[in-house]
Image (cartoon, rainbow, N blue to C red):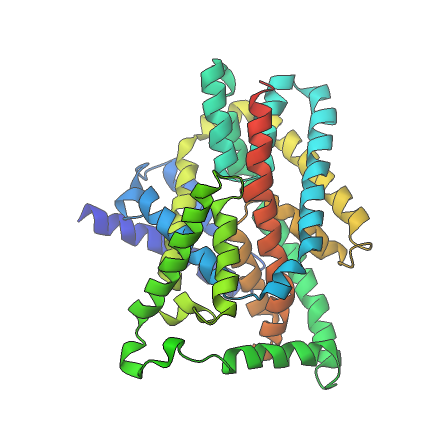
Length: 396
């Protein structure tokens, strides 16, 4: 009974978030509303382990993350993946802007150790926050132990709505271009839509097996094989390349060779199940702090977040035109450092779905925005933030 009750509460929080997002046409992102509900719940009556009781354990999340990243790879091709080097550059240079502003200006307001403890989670996800928390404990700096996780929680809450606003502006800009060029068969818009349809229509069942053997479990097994191989290669490389990045790349390659289908997990009817579980686990991190703890360090958090985002904005503003991005798209790429996957995927698909008037327009918006957001998020959260955290641990 307890497990079913916990699961129901988690799902209701997700449902409320999605309904509010739908009612506001994604002006208020679902992920933001759900995060607020979890935060209020943890700070009032929800048990801290409600997400684990709902069956979303670290083991489940490890499986879900790998499978979902292979799935994300199935939405791209190798040429498209390599073409996103501009998004990687903008995202990483945006992180550099954050580092410069927080370290130089932030150290004028706060002591050095406070700034060092707060910056890595500001440039990445929960992994960087936990690395800094453990480092502070080992160094005996108990007064700052709550700062990294609190920073992770607060900057995500700011990052979700800000990124949604930018993506909506980018979506509307692309929508105008779509309607201006869709009837011109030689335009980039028409070519992209044709490529998208050809990619979906040309896919043949793997091994050309009879329909009775092309079952959902056959799809899941193939995705799992790719994810397992990617994680094994990650172990062989001793983490030099993050296993999550390898899962994405292997997903692209497996899709190119026809080993897995486009949107494989969606066709197997388990995509949403895995995505909701992964999100629930991320929201569970909101239980690691309390209003009392945040109240003691709120000034440091707010000032450093504002400095960090200002650094991202200036870097994005300067780099947008040289790299051929709109300023909104460049800034959104930089902001992926505040949350990464799966939030970048959810925010992007929500905006594309609500801005578009039909499936072709949604495909056009998604093809233009999603690869940039995914690759930018991996460059910052999965790679850069872990490196930054490792370096900053030595500065404590």
